[in-house]
Amino acid sequence: MNARTDFQVIVGRDGKPAFVVVPYEVFKRLNPRFGKGSVPNAVVNRAFDKGVSPMAAWREQLHLTQAEVASRLGITQAAYAQMERSVKPRKATLEKVSQAMGLEVDQLRW
Image 1 (cartoon, rainbow, N blue to C red):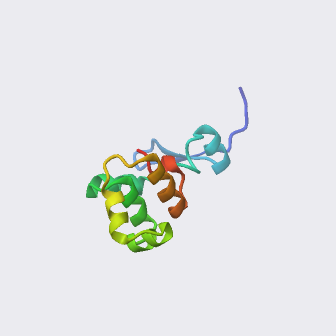
Image 2 (cartoon, rainbow, N blue to C red):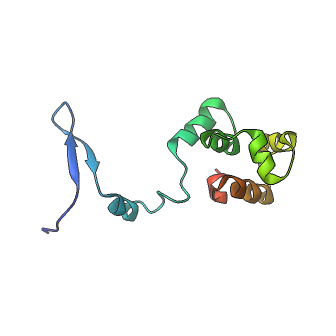
């Protein structure tokens, strides 16, 4: 098959292929879970490295304080802090917090 590809191979120091660069639209078709609704590696690392909830990791990634998120939710900072510490937050809580942070619910549920 002689199909045209827009891939670019980057060779490592050892002379072997190390990376492949593809146009973003092609990448999204190859990996449909990437993009909207995905969770950046930095958020996952923050959660595991610091031992915090996905909610807290996202808040820190978005450079928000607990008080700012609480204000968006119309609750106190202490009430929001309790939500953040919950091991298994309720669906309604995840829906409200995701909306306050501009995320999708699934981005907080992992």
